[in-house]
Length: 243
Ligand code: 6PG
Image (cartoon, rainbow, N blue to C red; front, side):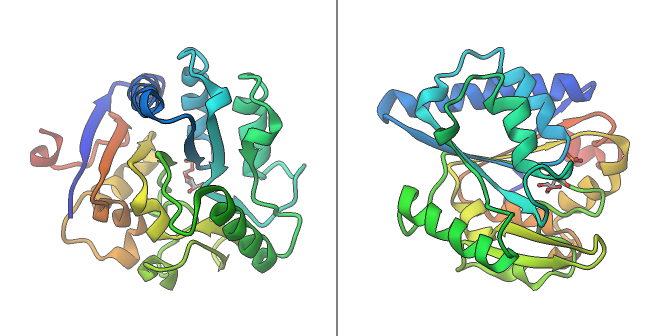
């Protein structure tokens, strides 16, 4: 199980800018040999910092197909809707044609939204969907995507997408499953803030149990894994990991 490359920057904006530069370089390299690339984006608030930095990178967005990592069980227009956040903070400011961003249809029932999203992935990326880059965050409880502590989906290594009830949030979620996350060519963890420090220490601790730190699942990837943290999120990492 790999730890992945670890970059620790003074603050959230610096971590996001470094993440933007490295991920833009990886996408440009992929576009040297392929006409199109596929990227999956997490929701929440941290991605907004990356999106702002990506807007300065002059990426060829017309050749980048955007997808979601996960969605809350709320319809478009709800303030919590991740797809709306991606549209307002990236798709619109980057003038990305709406057809290039493939939303999870959270206006449908959770199970139907998951089924249709899996069908979309298969139709666009084939039966073994392999993203060029997947952006993940981590919650203060060490969840990633919508894989929360104690969810048996953390152990799933065959499915593509599932709906899942998150009791602590009293909310349905629709999420990519570990197999899709782990198959990404470049897996990115962008995590900032003091409230994530304990979670990051658990995520990067080789001995912490997966069901208590689901974001640890990212370390199973055989491809490229990179963590971009600010000093606050890295505060509880032991010296040997920071080195
Ligand atoms: C979501 C995200 C989730 C996110 C973490 C961190 O729907 O909430 O996909 O996995 O990455 O919760 O969120 P913040 O960036 O807001 O801290």
